[in-house]
Amino acid sequence: MESLQQIGYGLALALQPANLLYAFVGSLLGTLVGVLPGLGPVTTIAVLLPVTYQVGDPLGAVIMLASIYYGAMYGGSTTSILLKVPGEAASVMTCIDGYEMAKQGRAGPALAIAAIGSFVAGTVSVVALSLVGPVFARYALSFGPPEYFALAVCGLALSATLSLGSPVRGLVMVAAGIVLGLIGIDTVSGRERFTFGILELSDGIEMVPMLMGLFGLGEILVNLEEKGAFKLVSDRIGRLMPSREDWRRSAGAIGRGSLFGFLIGLIPGGGAILGALVSYTVEKRISKHPEEFGRGAIAGVAGPESANNAAASASFIPLLTLGLPSNAVTAVLFAGLLIQNVQPGPLMMTEHRDVFWGVISSMYVGNVMLLILNLPLVGLWAQLLRVPFWILGPAILTVAIFGTFSLRNSWFDVGVLMASGAVGYLFRKASLDAGPLIMAFILANILDTSLRQSLLMGDGHPAIFVTRPICATILAVALAVVTVQLVAWLRRRPGLIRDEAT
Image (cartoon, rainbow, N blue to C red; front, side, top):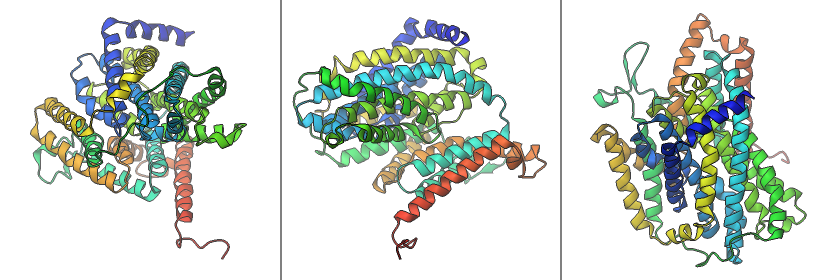
């Protein structure tokens, strides 16, 4: 009953004309940029972050950020189906059967079922978020510094080992992110750390230029290098709405994908990629026609698309209630919240009640807007793919530069953008995932502060981390995940571990 009252309060805020406008603009911008090949949610939010900085109202700014996120997630399915280029990592499973359907002249039903499945999954997840979020927040109020340290360590461990590439690379990226996050003046001793005498680094590296460079500028440079690589599989979308048989085969996949995605999205480091993979695997195993998967099975589109959008909604729970981003996208959203002077965490429901419930309720409205934008306008989004990226890329780069400069009128920030862009480009060429680095960069201060507070509580003895049951359990889970992933990776490396047969 209390949750229903809070949702009603949030809806009253979300349905205000100004907030409706922010939701619409965010959905439109997110879909617009998300449709472009190679630019996923992380890049989209990073590039458009300065736009939300200009919004004076924190609730309106966060609503716009959340809408951009969902819009980019929706837009990613278009490039996956028509170009076989994942709009974002979670859409890689959609490419398999979506592209095959497009080759068979069934691009319309594939795009429609992706949009409808995403709408259903997003709505179901938002309802669940409204019920589960307050429970998480109340539970998190009992956490002390040791538990927060353990949660941060667990989130970074999962992010490093479940991200793209080897777990060793992930752990190295986490270490680099922590070092970068500690640059600036130490709040305890007042001494400078890793500033090398550069005055602009006294307050640390500015988060927005770094995010825009690593994800936005880095992606643009890589895509500019691959000119002519993107070609539409079909000039016409054809019949849009799925047939009765398509509905029959997709209904169960949408339901199961929504459930799997939501549960996996609650796990720090899990996210949309793992949700889509689990959904696709399950659908293929329980299907009466598994041979159709990989050849244009509509369930292979409906399940993963539903799962990745459900996981996107679920990832807001650890972000808003625990103050811990669970993946690279929510790490960027975390930065957006901090820019608006909104501190995510268990106290957010009381200190920023309007933002918490207003954002959750706005997701209902945003899902409807995205459905309207994606179904009738799917032909328009497809035509956008015809614009050469050598035209779009410089335009987006110009927006990024002006947006960065407008934050603090600082050319040093523009330099950070350029340097981060060069590093992001090199990361992409070396197949390094920047997600763990960004999460570690944002969580570095939480790790540092909670570690010091915990040691003070324990009179300097690290035993406090194992004598508190919740803290010890979380750290044990983190250690187990890292160990399992490292062993699995070593077994895949020939010559490192002797084959059991020999």
